[in-house]
Image 1 (cartoon, rainbow, N blue to C red):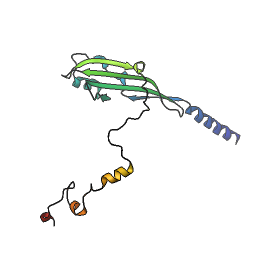
Image 2: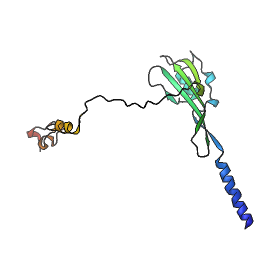
Image 3: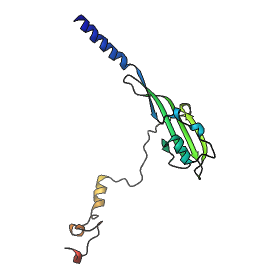
Length: 162
């Protein structure tokens, strides 16, 4: 019985200690196996970049034509939230002809904190109280006869009804 208690104590201790081990996880595009050095400015096309590196993590929505390959390495200890240990962003810019115009590498050192604004954005429009809204809606709706079968509030001519 004593040996059984020691055995379960060792199992419990092993479980507790293993919970404290940090776990590393790669998220996004895994850049360490990539061929970014083969992308040549002025000669490599979009199709060739996609063939070498695969589909980008994201593409620019506005302005210049740019593909982004984003890689993040995180560590988690026990039940804590993941901490970013390393982050790399490769930005590949293309000219209007679809040829690489520049290749830039950014790391976590290039990142900057952006303060979240606590202000509220005012929306345009009228501010009515409940009474103004109620009084403003009087007479704005169609009668049952006009709305029966009409589209968008347009009544159907009387001869067309069945």
